[in-house]
Length: 214
Image (cartoon, rainbow, N blue to C red):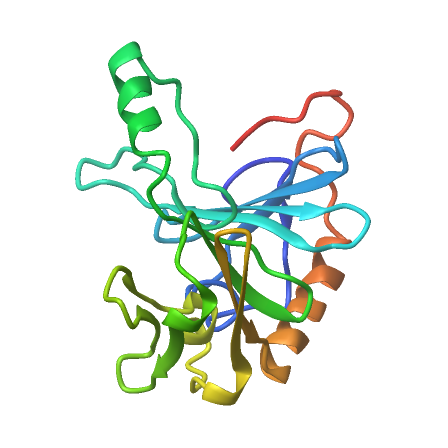
């Protein structure tokens, strides 16, 4: 075991989370309407997730792995807003100057993977969104060649599921492009089973009244 007081998620293995054997999942006490879960994997990889307490909707997911020297690396955000850091005066000015740049954020729903690209001022008709099956990614293009982005769907890669162009759609409003990919039944079934398992786990620091951040 990796730590005293951590709950173990049973019945989950190589293909359940991240393509790695699942180690321990330790939920923080429930606070501010969120359930926070911290996963520890045998190879040192960590994953932290946040769920809405009422709906069980995934709000955030980030990953961290060990560096070559064995220390913890930086968190890499997969779902949710990018991690914010305290900025100095110069950095604040640079952020302010670049605030009009496109911002790419993933925010899922219960039935779909969803991405929002903010600060895109062009009319809806210039955008196109497609699936590159061989490269296993989605591609956003504009006919005026002002914006281009390729991005994978990590969940589909972890379970080695094929991408389906029919599951992809997009809409545009208020300078924001919203891209939606309908979750296949395989993903929905796994997420349903995961929620059942998480409900069985007792918080690692249950009773101390503090919600520790990951």
